[in-house]
Image (cartoon, rainbow over all chains, first blue to last red; front, side, top):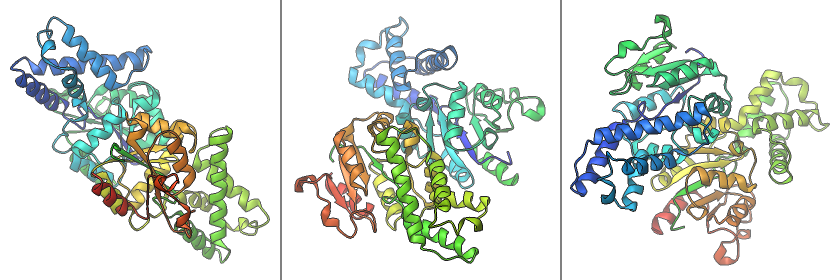
Length: 244
Length: 244
């Protein structure tokens, strides 16, 4: 990591706790109309289908659709499905539009703002997210994420793990792959960046893939994929400071 | 300006005082080799030729070249010209590379950081500059410009005043032209934005085009082009706060 000048961050799950924020808004909207449901399951299904949607674009060559549009399509499909169809008549078009923007209003993990501020002192810090630009800008203002730049799959008309997203951000930074580290809570993201010669930092986050089994993730020294494994951005800032 | 949600800023001259910073580095590099010259003239020629270069791309359809590359080509051409050729043998390749990056290290006007911070409370604030992404990111860190997003001609492979730069940034913000105001110290930029339906703010800056004749710039109410004319970002923040 000695040559690293910039850190690119995955956002959903790595920087923000999408699960808590989305569940809370679903629950509040449900309560407003006197309906209870398994909102954790609803949120997870919404997220999983979004992930499948971006993967179809990134890997299978499907046409690019912005994440705002994709989130809305999935929401409509879910509400038309047998499992959730009882909710559909309760929510107005205006409420659905507002609910769809919950992904712009996700709260950070407890260390996110302070950790990013610490890392920003010595590195360029930027998003490299599948979220669209407006979503990332709104979220940064909402939950205080002090990005130096916002890079989005939208700018490269594809999604991670397609190489053109990583290489596009690296080109905008006028740097080489070995000078730009990927920071993510998902191994597919770490592996895609590593293949391109980027160093990588795996972040273990609550209920993301390595929790409750952080031992499943290994550093390169242990035969795994990541250069560094941490549980918070403050821990990462300390490690990078020591390594200087 | 009532419907405005985002402000796009021209950077060179509008947010940063390129003249003072570039002259100072030229003078210091000259002094290092015991040479004196009209550094103000050198800086102005460098800037003017850059402006012509971006105009050829924006208006005449010349191939896109990044501003870093364009600045270096112009520097090399100038040092090969009779007027400046006596300097050329003195400066090493390493010094020229470093000098070329002076455009990444421009100081803000006295009100820039504080004014942008005030505007950021109520608006999305972003660059819309012909400077390349890395230049804008380096400059923001160097002189404390708290952008919510960095938009550059590089992202749209053209330069202002080509409409695709303004429309590209507006699309990334998921907004309509009447919701995004252009803030600039140059009338060509204000006019290009106005033609697309964007509100505009003209900023009078020392030694930029309206100084020493600020009366040459008129608001729309006076038959001119700008919605608002100000002399600082703090003044703009006050006006927008009053208009709420």
